[in-house]
Length: 585
Image (tube, rainbow, N blue to C red; front, side):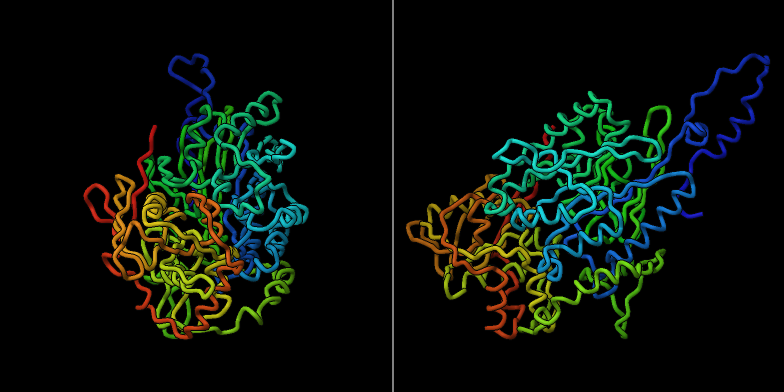
């Protein structure tokens, strides 16, 4: 047997043996079933499979990890197992199919949606990155998908109608399961205003109450689930982010929402049992999902690295989670830098306890042409680096890094900008660059969004007020600012900054300063103040490519953050970024 356990078998056998008699030979009152085995035919079993934040990873990584072909094999194996045991499955995605890998980005995620069709997804939440493209691309993807894209809280401003379906009811092993889709409110501030200006993103916590009432009034479902793209924040401590799945679960009446299948924060939601604290999860570990207000909350990290498997039992009108796993899809042992560890022969090793998953040949054949389509341009070498440029999400969103500073400097130093310093939001840094040759592919992996570079000018006084809001964005959020060419201290408690130096000169509140940023940030993206800025109408990735080509050899020491340049203070302690505020009940 594997680790998926059916509890109570021995206890049930004893109860069955004893239930036929008692000391007085009086009639035994029927016992209410407490397990699926006791309930027998009255117990319905089904399995929810889930992934989230695909971000263009339709093909396996260069080290053979994840990929839709292997995902198809794994999911088909699970389906066959579940069906052989009398159950049925439903497959959900927590959204963000778009943006992250050049071969996908250049082809508008067509191979990703094709792969999802071949894997046979049942529904997906609409992610914020679905709006990295104009709405006609969204419409193309919606028509291409053989499954519904769900979002109850996105409205068309022109018509006042929902832009997507709010929910769909599925019959799974005889049970009617309503699946509601919800999208983070942050889309309005982190999305491209040019593309989403005609859409309204309402509060998911309020919207779900309306939809649940609609479902219950129509007696349309036995169970209600949500597939969301809102993020999981332990104990609802969301910091600078919009409220996520925990706040959603706490906002509804207990018992109204059975489970949330999430995405957006790109974390394995694995908790220390019976707490609001994350477990110290490592690849291949067992995982206990969160439960808030009676609602199970799950998320399967990112990129199809795992397939989440939740085995449910339904009896006595109640839903029980029998077991839960995050099943790795050809994941390797990692080195200290967070990359697959390689021996002297360049070979990687699967994480202990896992076995290799073969790739489905039909999926491979269907997606291979898309993989090959953009190779020539993407693989041209444009420069090199003598060390790793750090863009790992867990690092770049929590502290100053050499890659964050390189990006800010590339923009501030660009010939059409020539600014005093640069600001880069960490959410716009999507990958690291390894030591060695740098290709255009590497550039697009780091900056896939195509934001335009811009510059703004402010007096020192106005700049201080602006940075009071920008530099205090909490560590861990995509809004966390990478700052290059400026020295300052941040009082996280007071939410104020003290600027010491800009461009090598002592700060002067009366002087005017020019700084670079993206048009996305200038328009109020990531919750930054909307400001007047001049766009140079050149995309950030092109500016970065020009910078690397001009410098040829990137020396990491030239961009490594200098201790004392950017100082964060909170509660009398020196930190690497402002901490998130504690949850307010």
